[in-house]
Amino acid sequence: MLTQPQSQFVPDLSTLNDCAKKTSSRSNRPILRRLFVAGVVVACSVADVVQAQAPAGGSAGPVVGNAPAASTNGVAARGGMPGRRGSNRAPATPRNPVPILPALPAPNDTSFYASNNVPHGRIEIVHYKTSAGAEKQMHVYLPPGYDTDADKRYPVLYLNHGGGENDTHWSANQRQGGYANLILDNLISSGKARSMIIAMPSTGGVVSGTPPKPGEDDACSQEYLKEIIPFIDRHYRTRANRESRAVAGLSMGGFVTLNTGLTHLETFGELYVYSSGYWPEQLPAFQENIKALLSDPNINDKFRMPIYFAAGETDIALLNSQKTLAVFNNYGIRSFWVMSSNGHEWLNWRRYLYQTAQIMFPEDR
Image (cartoon, rainbow, N blue to C red; front, side, top):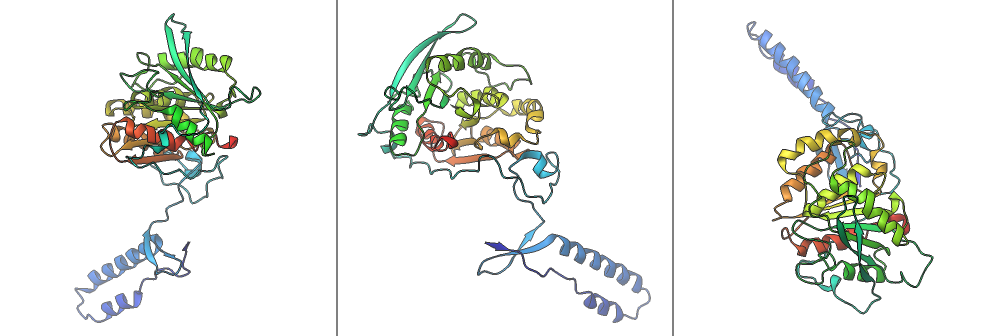
C-alpha cells in the first residue's frame, strides 16, 4: 500500500542568502539578487509538484505531479475534455466493477478447446432473408441443457469472422477455425463461463472498415438491427435486452464491434475487438464521428464490461488496434488491452474468446 508522507520538500533559503552576503562586489549584487529570486521560485515550484510515495516497509521515492486516479466514468470524472488536466476527484463507483481478466492459455495449449468428456452443446445452421432480398446463412451455438430446460432464457454473444471467411469459421474444428463450441462447452462445464447462445453470422460484403457518420448505419449495422438480432430473438429463448447482448469480432469482424456495437449501445452492452482497429487514414473520421458519444459524462455506465482490445505482438493489426484504443483512452473509457504472443492467426483468436467468454454477462453468474 502506498502512503503519503506528512513532510514536503522545503527550499533552503539560508544557503542562498549566505551566498549573497559573502560577495562585496557592488557590480555582482544585482545578478545575485536575481539568482536568489530565481532559486526561490524554482524551489517553491519543485515543492509544489514533487511528492513522495512509499510502499509499506520501503523507502520513499519521488512521483512527479499530482496525477489523479484513472477515470472510470468518462470526461466528467476527469474534469474536462481530452488533453486537459483532470481533477483530483475520485471517480464514482461504476455499476459493474472491473473483473479480474483471466490469463490467456499458453500458445501451445490445446486442452481448452479439446473435445473433453463434458456435456456438449450443439450447432444449428439457419437461414434468413435480408431486406435487400439476399439469402443468408448463420451458425448458432446452443449451450448444454438448452433442450432440456424449456423455461430458461439465455444471453447472446454475436461473434464475427474475419475477411475472406464466413459463418462457418468460428465453429470449425480445424487449424483455421475457432472451435467456439468446444471452448464454451469446456468453460460452461467448469463453471468459468455462463451458458450463452452464440450467433455467428456471415458479414462478408457488408462490413466496412470506414467509421460511420453519426446516425448513419452502414449495411452491416442495418442487417444486424433489421434481420440478424430479430431472427435470433424470434427463434431462440434469448434475453432480448442490451444487458444480455455482447458483440465480438476478429480482424474485419472487429469493425462490426466498432461500427455496429459501439454506435448502438442501446442494443449491445459489451464490446470485444480481436486483432482489429481503424487504419491511420480513417482515425480522424472515427475521432470526429464518435466524439459526441464518448463525451457523454455517463458513457462508462453504458459499457457493462470495459471495452476489450487484444492483438499479437507480431500482428499486422497491432498498431491500428493500439491507436484505435488510444481514442477511447483520451476520454477515460474503461478498457482492457491485451498483447499476446504470435500474430494475426486463429491460435490467438481462440485464446481471446476463451479469455473474454469468462467475463461476459456478469450479473448472470
